Length: 157
Image (tube, rainbow, N blue to C red; front, side, top):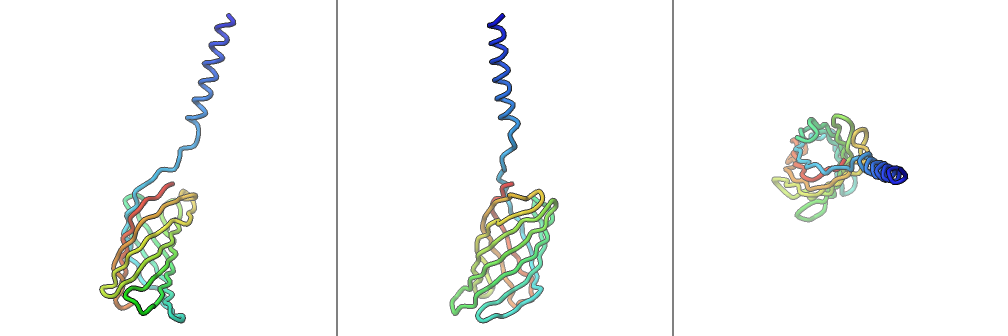
């Protein structure tokens, strides 16, 4: 009888340990993120040797569906072939928001844009989101044309 109780105690202990492992929260998964967004300028200010650009955009992601975006870009005007730019964007998606920081180079006509982006935060279903990737696109020639940016990377949430 004692042996049977010890066996059941061992089986019960093992079952509790297994259920504790199974019951732990799922780890965040990496997801391929490849949206294309088209931005339009909402305001432009020149401060010293920099453009401060406010923008709105929209696009679609296979992963997240429709995306609306707002952002601020600071582009340094340097006497060089390409101008460095940094941007802070908020992507509004179903279930929350994703904050993106970008670092890019804007090269002369046809205003080729290349760079990288990093997730800096999120809300709602995207609280705790992380990720990064590359960006490329074609910039505005007049400042009033749409700017198309292709993002490629991973989101983990």
